[in-house]
Image 1: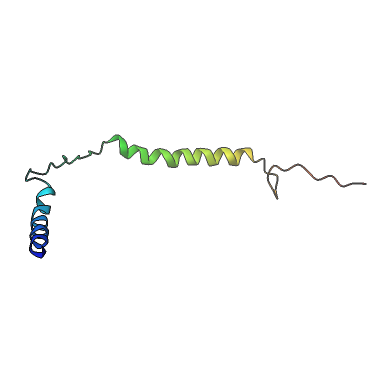
Image 2 (image 1 turned 180 degrees about the vertical axis):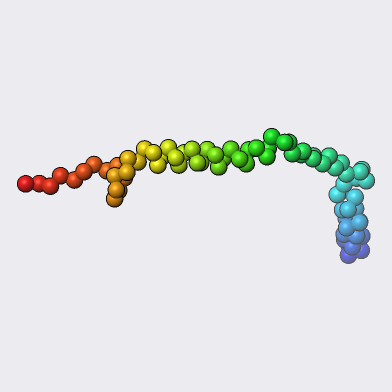
Length: 78
C-alpha cells in the first residue's frame, strides 16, 4: 500500500510541470515608439502667455480700492 502511494505521489510530482504550459514561443508585443512633433514645443509657450493675460485681466478689474479690493464701503450707523 505504501509503495502504491509513493509511486502515485512520484508520478504526480513528475507530471505536474507538464501541465504548466507547452513549448510554444512566447509572443512579445511590438514596442511602440512615440515621435515628438515640432508643434509640441510651442505648447510650452502658450500656457505662460495665457497666465499673463489672465493676471492682467484680474489686475485691471480690481479697481484699486486700496485695502481690500472691490468690497463695498462701510457705512457708519448713526
